[in-house]
Image (cartoon, rainbow, N blue to C red; front, side, top):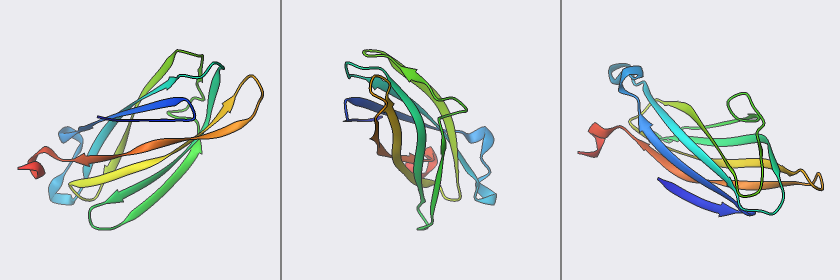
Length: 128
């Protein structure tokens, strides 16, 4: 588990290897990740968009961005948190992701960027 605070927002990430959705023989490795977003500011925020950088251990990089997370643009009030689960497929047993969220301060309508800390995804059998 990794955590980072930026712009008054704490991002915590936990990762899980998904063996039932993976096929190592075909170089298909599926991971799930749970993200908790905590608003430590004194104003409500809204998550507008996400921007991810995804690395496989073979050196390949993918970039993806889009509105919200898992189909929603959650509003998070001061002192509250929002949690979601999503997934990432890799072509190798080990990879890394990091990125940013674009947030809006609902009180003054100004946008700001929150960092998503880098986190590793490793198939358990690769750790031996």
